[in-house]
Image (tube, rainbow over all chains, first blue to last red; front, side):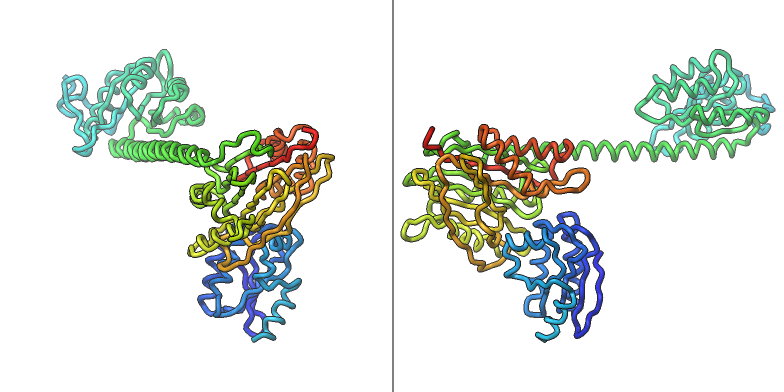
Length: 114
Length: 427
C-alpha cells in the first residue's frame, strides 16, 4: 500500500497510500515500512499530507516503527493536517517524533544531521 | 417380457434382460460406498419410461418411475430425489409446468431437471429454460449422451451438497463464537462499578457501549479514604477482542485497594500520575503495539479539588451550574506506549453544582453518512444542554445524539461516558 521515494542523502520518503491510517490498515502499513527498514532504509520521512485521519491503531503503528528503527536511523513526519496534529499533541507525540510542515524540510534536517 | 424389444427411440440398443423397477433389478451404485442417486423419470409412455429407467439403473443410479407430472411432483417431495428427467409433452401437467411447480416447492435441496425433447420441440427450449430447466436431452440420443448428462447432474449435486455442509458448519461455528463473545461481554460488564447515584455527595452517571459486543474501554470509580472519590477511564488502542483483553486486565488490576495504594504520593497526597507511571511500567514491555489512553483522578468531595492525570485521553468537559463549559487538561503521554514516559498530576477545582464529563474519543470521531465527524463542538453542546436539565440523562443524551448522527448505525469504536456532578450549594 505504501509508496516510497528516494530523496537526497539517503533519506527515503514514505507515503502511506491511504487517506486514513486506522485499525483496518495499520498493521499492513507497519509491516510494509518495517520491511523497508529491514532492507536498509533507516532514514525515513513519513509524508502524512494525504492523510486526513489517524486513530489509536495508526498511532501505535507509527510508534512501533520508531521503536523498530531505534538506533539504526531516524523517523520524522511531515504534512500533518490540523486534526492529526491535534491528536499528536494530546498524546504528546510531538515530543516523541520530529514533526515538520513539509517533506523537504524534514528531509533537509535529516540530511544535515547525518 | 420386454427382453427382445428393440426401441426406435434410443439408439436401437437391446433392452437388458431385466428392467429396473418391474423385475427387481437392483440399482448398482456407481461407487460402492455411496448410495445411488435417485432419479425421477416422468414419462407417460410406458415403453419409453421403462427403457429410460433401465438405462439409468444400469448407469448406477436409482430410477423412480412417474407416469405423469402429478405423480412426479409427489415423488419429488417424498423421495428426496435430486434429479428429474421429464418428458416435455405429458397429460395433466406437461414438462414445463412440472418444472415451474418443482421450482415453486422451495425444497431445501436443489433438483436438477433434465428435459427430454423431440427434435421438433427445440423451439420450446427457451420457455423451458425460463421455467427453470437445467439441461436437455433429445429423444434418440445415445446412452453415452444420457450418461454425460447424468454425470453433469451428479457433479453439480455433489458441489451443492458440499457447499451446504460448509455453510452448516460455518453457521454453527459462528453461533458458538457469538455465544462465547456474549459471555465475555457479560463478564466484562461485571467488572464495571455498580454506581450509586450519590457517592460522598458526588452524583455519578455513565454509559458503556461496546462497538462489537466486547469493549476495549474500561472505567472504575471508588469511594476512597478521607472523603475522596477515585476514578479512571481507559481506552485501549484499536477495538474488538484483543483490545478487550487488555481493558479487562486493567479492570481486574485496578481495584479500590490498588487505586488507593498507587494514586497517592508518599506523603499521602493525591498523585494520579503515579498510578499512570506504575501502569506504564507494567504494560510497556509488550512486543505488540497495544497501548491505552487513560484519565484518572482523585476528587475531594468536600472541597471540589480535583487532582488528575490525563494520559492521552481526550480532555474532559467541565460544565458549570450556569452552563459555562470548558475543557480541562492539554494532554499527556498514553500508557504502555513509551517506556519511561513522564506523567504529571494537575489540579482543578470543581465548583459546586458543576459537572465533569469524560467521553472516549469514539464520540468526537463518529462520522455521519457524509463522513463528517461529530466533533468536539457538537459534543460540548449536547453535554451542556443535558447538564442544564438533568445530568443523569447526560450519558444517554450523548449516546442518542451519536446514534442520530450515525443514522442509526452503530459506532465504529467503543464508547464510554462517565459524568460526575458536584452537589450544588442549593441542593
